[in-house]
Image (cartoon, rainbow, N blue to C red; front, side):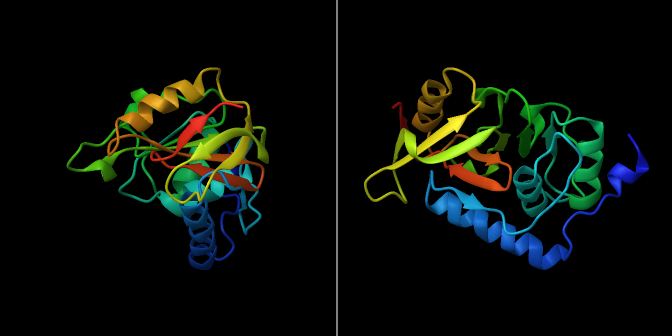
Length: 194
């Protein structure tokens, strides 16, 4: 890992940019499956993309361990800019950021019935998000249905999502990121194929 990678710029205005990214994320969580654009242009170390990096910087802090498979340079960049400790495994993380094959949902912290907010959030970097096609999403924040095609998730993700949703109020929330775009899957949303 080079010192230059860890010191590469993060948010230009850390407070305003983090707030703007957090607002985009909240909008995506309140309208599951709709694609939102991250309002800042970050250039994190590869393979970490701008939306995934922005979500991690907006959410992570010194009290939230973050796990990532993005490599040592990206992990150092995230730790430097977010001040977050590194988790040893996805199961130990408050936030898990996957640039490659994501960990299985049931291996992440699920929270408890009494404290569901202790569950992990999974940030998954994917090649593409295409609104208006693919999955049929239903649930809170969706009047009838939203459609979303996600490229690059492992086979069987929708079936595993059903088990995650059935554990409500426990379960994992997922943020999907492609380039500067993001979409959210809160644990309350149902996914139907095709």
